[in-house]
Length: 113
Length: 112
Image 1 (tube, each protein chain N blue to C red):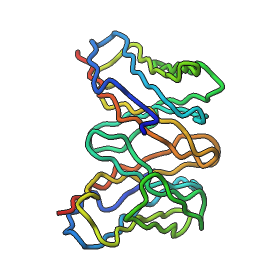
Image 2 (cartoon, rainbow over the protein chains, first blue to last red):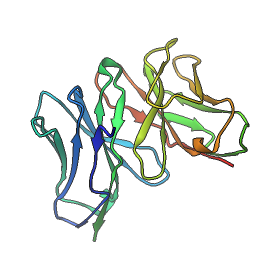
Image 3 (cartoon, rainbow over the protein chains, first blue to last red):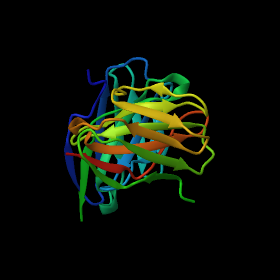
Image 4 (cartoon, one colour):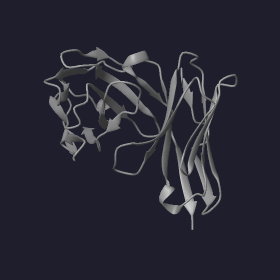
């Protein structure tokens, strides 16, 4: 049972344009969502998060939108840069105060110069 | 500031051998986690430690044991390695309150 789904394995975008990465979830008990970025041979790096009581959180070029009724969240990167090329993981917190994360399979973003 | 340090970075084992993966964090975090990542998959939680002296199972604990040695260190042990445990193992830590978890760079483990 895959509780966090990233249905697009890959996405290719031109430099300067918007990148939109999508994530769907099935567990209504998730109370926090996070996006991580991962480069090859490195650990995941935290990017941005959003509480389930909010519908938007913005940090510089990164914005996360949460639609609880649709159980859907998205990460917008504007403008996209070649250095943004990485695998992006969506994760939901199912562990209450223990913050046990459930991850999606990831989306490989390629930003072309 | 090293953050989360994992050792070793690479290891090859034979089936049946035992191995301990080490993890240390220097951020004075209370909670620590072990995940595994298989090709084309997201990270899956093996074990976690909410605070020093406590450990609990995650999604895929079978075949593993953990020890929270002190606040800084959280080790993962494979008592009898199996090829199905070939994976990249990530350790993470978190302070109190909401996420995020901070990850190490992983241990790439191959079991032949």
